[in-house]
Length: 165
Image (cartoon, rainbow, N blue to C red; front, side, top):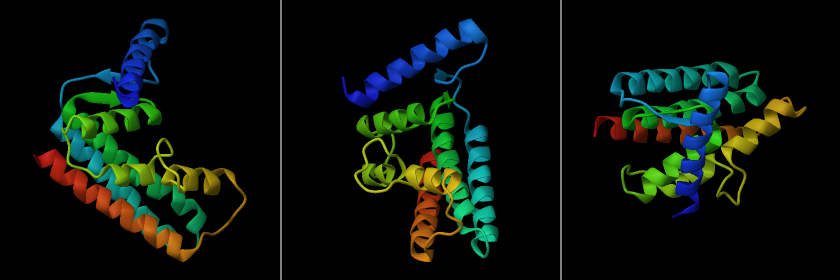
């Protein structure tokens, strides 16, 4: 079993345990596939992308967060389509990698690597979000912004295709 599949299994067990103990979870649960909810996640992703453009002029540092959450809602849309709900980013990424491995979705693994710090050797979108959200920088290079904005657009576009398949 791959590392991603092991992580998915751990996330599923974690969620069940937490639901029993606390009534809520920070893992991964199976739910009914929900294409309507997937579409709402895409709407939220596009909303975050629109907010990113609003922030571009004066708040590039904050846009690192809106770019990440634009991408993350796209991934949550994929999970909704296949009948999962996540309360944990690592669990979300593990399941996406598992879907890629099982050929359930057609998305480039390298694209996910650019987002997630799990398998990435270069700065991921998660690391950029953390740097600008928790750090003291008030701006980011426009080139970096543009690169990540285009990445978010690509992920949203790819996700829309996956949801409709």
